[in-house]
Image (cartoon, rainbow, N blue to C red; front, top):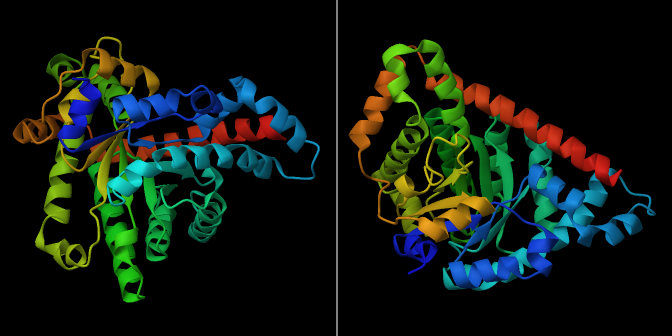
Length: 358
């Protein structure tokens, strides 16, 4: 059997970390959905910059939009919202068949709003209305202001993909914001069953930074390289199980609220010495999502080994964290630094994107 379809049998959804008109117009995304069971799509400013800069299908529309008195951001949205709508429509059958737990497309609010909760909420509501599809996720970063915005959007019944999470501290804070949002929605008479959220934990960047720190430490610390991100994901999943399948979520669960699924992001392996499926094969488990760039999707289809691995070796994951602390590596500080760097990268990509549409 296709390993991508096997993964789904273990309760994990595979999403594509890419979207472009080439994927849509040439039928690639439709084939991924039908043949590989791809159950969602994630996007970000870097993905759309690459699509618009290199995609022949955007040229005529962009030229037409440049003749109109619009801002660069409005032109960008006019280009990509139809793509997001088409992807939502392709995934609509999965969304319906799953009762709303699969079949989503993510669209990010402007990275320039990462520290402005009110503006993020306003942008999320506006983009939700513009796309006008039930299977849209508004993508919001896990900054301090983002946490406030997540609570506000969930409280307004808007489904959210939380991005730029790099630590267990981020995981805990985001889950708490989600629960507060659900409680606000329920208290206001809203329907909690209509809301979906995923919490995107970025993995390869964690190993890249921690490995560098381990190499600076040298000696026995070198043996810890390449293990941190998988350990982080496994411990995050244990917290997910305790939080959303424990008594604390029981009232909301009884009202039909969904858990906030963990999503593994940044899953393309950056170190060529490591397996190209380092962030896939060890992290297969129920009620999770793994979003894969094209090359990792192809690798999983070609030579993936599929087993329910996510809940294994929790003691080893805890030992990895303890060993890192023993050599002076503060993983919460690592997470804070990586989030700040990730925001800068997305802001730069968004600025470059707006240069294309100016």
